[in-house]
Length: 171
Image 1 (cartoon, rainbow, N blue to C red):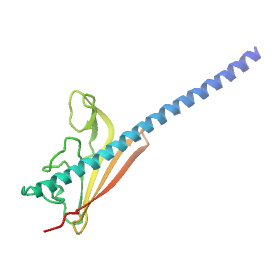
Image 2 (image 1 turned 30 degrees about the vertical axis):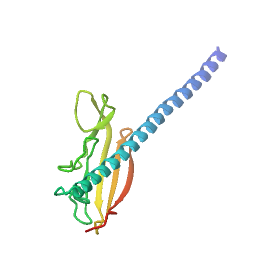
Image 3 (image 1 turned 45 degrees about the vertical axis):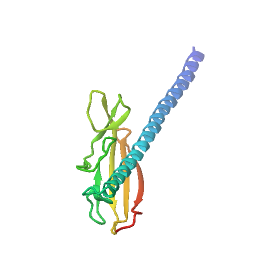
Image 4 (image 1 turned 90 degrees about the horizontal axis):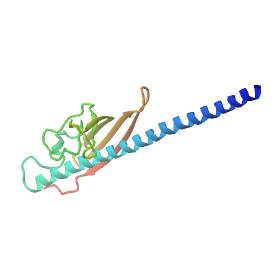
């Protein structure tokens, strides 16, 4: 009887160790997956902003009024502003200011955006795109910050930064 109780105790401790390892493995797997998604979302934020800068410059080259380096973001020299862009943001105009909305995942297109549809589900990712112009107007700095929570206590973030320079001669 004592041998059976000792054997049962050893087996119980072994199974608890395996369950603990499995639980941590699942948590770290989700953590890595969330970090990878956030990295791609931050990179997408930089890319969308770059496309808006290019769109703005092309409007100026084509002689469209209101186009020009950095005019898309309505920044004063040395100023900055926070935006919420998604893949649907393709032109200047009323660019959405940052409000802290959660990104939605559209399972029909496998894209993240802010548009509610029957195919969207809410994620725990928030993306802030901070656009700042240098004092002399020759550089635009873009920071794409994605934050998410991994539980009731822990909040994580990915912060990407890129610099775009006005290489076109003025005049």
